[in-house]
Image 1: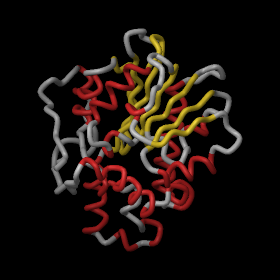
Image 2: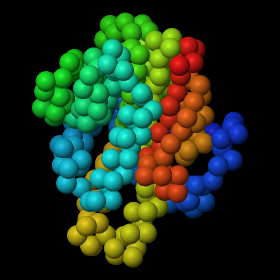
Image 3: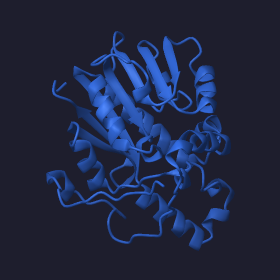
Amino acid sequence: MLHSPHYSQSQATALDTDRFPFDDDADPDMTRISIPIADVEALNDAFAIEHDINEYYERSSVFIRRIEASRLRTIARMIQACAADRILEVGCGGGHVLRLFPQSDLTGVDVSERMLDKARENLRGFRVELLKGELSHFNLPEQGFDRIICSEVLEHVADPEAILSEIRRLLAPDGRVVITFPNDHLIHRIKGMLRSSRLDRLPFLGKLAWGGDDYHLHIWRIPEMRELLARYFTIRKECFAPGRWLPVRCCFQCVGDGRA
């Protein structure tokens, strides 16, 4: 059975001295999921059914839409894609990130056929190849991608470190990676405050479960995110959506040996 791990904060870097509202103090009860590894694909399909990805981006509350719009802008700014770039998205979902790059050659990988159905709709007319399955199951070329994106994905996979290792293998020497995480400790704390104050009953604050954090197999604090990524890449930049004052989405621009 797979359980949600917590990584050690003992190897903190200089960046860890930054403090964020709500970041490390109280620790609310976090939802834990235990599933057989073989059922991860079924879990992601269940997530896709319960949380329609198009509705999430288009019809969720104004607060969620602003946070996600901020995340997408940050990804585009960090990737700095050129028309000739080969861009891979690991866990492409409904294609909402890939469609930020209409001039590039795109590849999207996802384990959920239901998510890929949405991506086919949303990326109609793009130069894109969509692949169903685990990233390591495809014969993708070593150092074959100039830009790689993995956004809000690692918390859903059985072995995040295997994904990061494969991303490192696929990244061109002068390539760039953008990886984002949900700040689940902060998200759960905010949701708890809204529920305890009954503000979640207001129509524009409804659907608190949107985003599917109850489907996450792993959770990390911000220093733990840095520690995990530093095992495979050099972190060049970090940004937060909607902002450092409320770091709901944590976005990291990373490079490999080529130091793009």
